[in-house]
Image (spheres, helix red, strand yellow):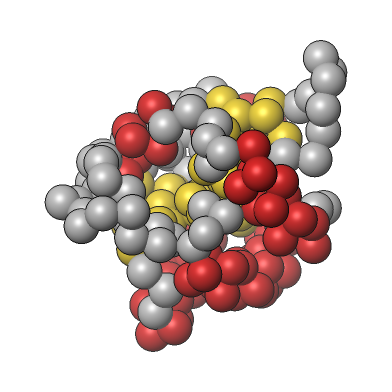
Length: 170
């Protein structure tokens, strides 16, 4: 989904990933679990640290976002046991859009981390404005962004697979 012509991602390859926390998409109430970038990668990750984290921003109206989702499941299935995590973030301020996105992400429950945000602030921090989706950010164990991808391109996903393999071997 191209919400407008993108200038470029605000965060760049080689810089540290901005930390943020979001609530689980499938839980409601005061005890809803929140996930933070620093839960997975970087110096504060602790014993549950991952060797690589792939953040995927999606929107309920983004057809390419839903097209790439099975690929993200495959990457998690292939590399999850070796320290890889996929985090899909549904960015949608419209309540009906969020519900539509939640239904589309139902099959992701338990396979990958799925969160929601109605606020554009965090998405703006990563993608800049205007947004260009789908947007993928591959982050290494130290919290550094090593790959930024926009659009759904199967050839680029093959290159991403190779990058993940390399990160997990380090």
